[in-house]
Image (tube, rainbow, N blue to C red; front, side, top):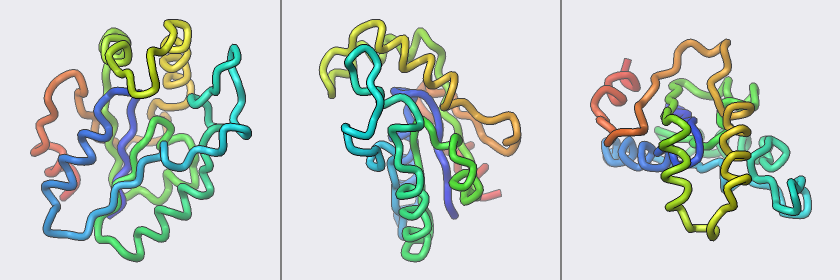
Length: 166
């Protein structure tokens, strides 16, 4: 089974991936985070002198796609998660199950302001992250088999597992 988890920055994609992994700890599970497959900084466009991690040009989709294929040969369950998980059609076609963690803009801004992993982000860049999510990270209209999780609350894993096992 190859599971996709999409959603905005700070929505809870990694948390959901960890919870799914815990439930399936009796199986061989591999989590692949799209952030690991970013291009080198010199290949990524800039916005106002800031590296623009929020655009498709920042992701090496071919490398990510190949990593999923390779993992599927070694693991029973692959969980692929990322902001632009539903952007690259060839990769989307690999997914047996599709999840989306949804939060509103106010929740995103509140969480992002507290997220200091890369230092304090300027307000204009946080706005850019949200706008990029709306442009590149939302579920494409052609996908109608996506289970949506409310990322504003503590994630109830049982409905998710029920969906995955259908």
